[in-house]
Image (cartoon, rainbow, N blue to C red; front, top):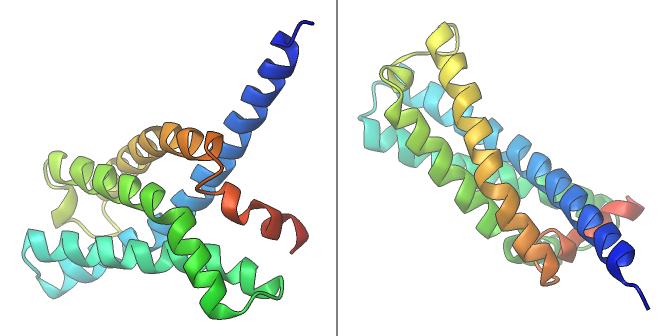
Amino acid sequence: MDHSHHHSADTHSVNRMAASATAHCLLGCAIGEMIGVTIGTHVGFALHQTVLLAAVLSFISGYTVSTWPLIRSGMKFIEAIKLVFAADTVSILTMTIVDNLVMLLVPGAMQKDLTHPIYWASRTLSLSAAFIAAWPVNIYLLKRGKGHALTHSYHDHS
């Protein structure tokens, strides 16, 4: 019996689900990252303080974006947050590390605010790199029934 077509369809499905999970994660992370960098640069934080604030806020906003649909589907908050911690932490961590590394490597990116073109060019680069880094992480997790796979059935019904 030839299983190559079935395997190809499964791989395509996992790749699509991973891309969707990564885009979802990117949205949540980007919100916190941009707010954190904006606050840090306007308040005059040191670079490491701005990165820490952006990272913490990316986790908060990332978890919020993932938790909200679960609560709307009828899940209790504590169960939803436990599921989201298990499902999204590795993806958010990967994105946050890559995003902040790229922002730190682009000269001047962390010294600009949201009105400066360097900020948007570096942010586009950093978020693209974060997506590229987190997508294979999400594929790996999905193939093992972890990551976004843990929340997938709840997102389908909300």
